Image (cartoon, rainbow over all chains, first blue to last red; front, side, top):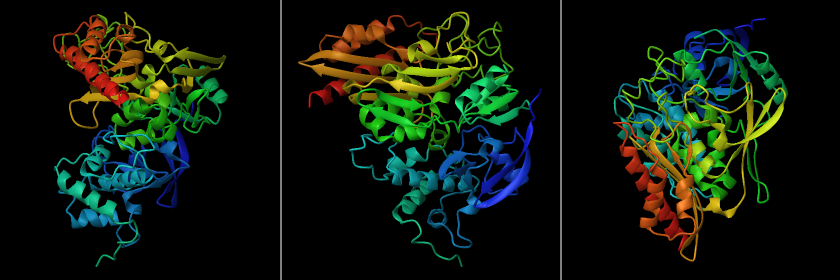
Length: 185
Length: 330
């Protein structure tokens, strides 16, 4: 018997539950943008190469264009819409704003979600490809410009705003998360 | 994309039973390669069996048994694991050298081993490809092949295996465990990928419907002195044009043990056994390392546009073994 090619699923996005029927071919990216009006997450290449569609799944950064929506059921999804606390911007958002970490802004939601995931990975002591000594006995590498660029290399910016993006991530890394939040005027 | 059914497996036996009953079914792990290929029409499964929630997500290490990696462990969790970083640093380095942070969080170890080549002709349905459409031809041989194989290829296919992780696993004598509806089995990773010959579409020696359940690495101090080095056309987030995983034990100025594997030069991670044979018991010098590389690369059959890989791999052997020897002498 041919299997059913669609399912009714419930997605947990930014702490809210959304129930919707999906054709199994639907990616999480298309479910967010086309079905749930959460258009902050951007579609760039749709091939897992540009990072514009980056969201957090169970707290880790992931590409929503390669994630089937049906396979995301039961997991905690955070999109750019869920990063700020109401009108209070997240320190990573503030850093991008203050340091002009963009030009056209299309890659920015993915850059910010990726930076959030990357800072959490670094805080958990994960090494990177440019970490000289990966052994756990070695000192965790400071977030140098080289480390930031390597760890953010999955996010492309066609405007080439990399200098300011790297600076914004560096500033966000310096500010203990939650302490520098300010209400946007 | 073809429409497909979706089921989430809760245990290994039901997962392999689902596959056994449907030749058009595929296992879905992280999906980073499979979903992409489904969008391109290269993969057209009628059913996906999601295995991400199977109880195969553990990494266990004991000094007696070595490292056991569950098939659904993500690349990111593998590279972050303290015992992997301590006991098999080249494996952590290899994983970290591949893809991006986002992809490493999604991709699984079993899927990494079974990922498909990134040959541009394979992923382009408008082009012939013996791997995708057996008998249709290989346009890469007379076409775009600057990053194709120099070792073990054939007149039917010159594609490379794209994994970094598998190169380190090959150097460390990894064994792959699998399960089918009729039982369990094991394969040395060096036997997982059959020779290309005239069957480039047969990419693994796994029986039909097999699920990779895990990978085991033997214990031993050699792997603690190991390194992975990757050369690519940009500084990050690109496939290798040449890579090497190496481990070296030197005592009294003599090579006591050595492991060498090459990436991006063949249809599979290439264990450099001829180079190992030449090195074993011999002196520790750049000349000896170069001679070993030459012995391995004597079998190379480069195409018009990828001959640079022969010198590249020779340089990598000399550089990485020299670094490991220098560290051993400290």
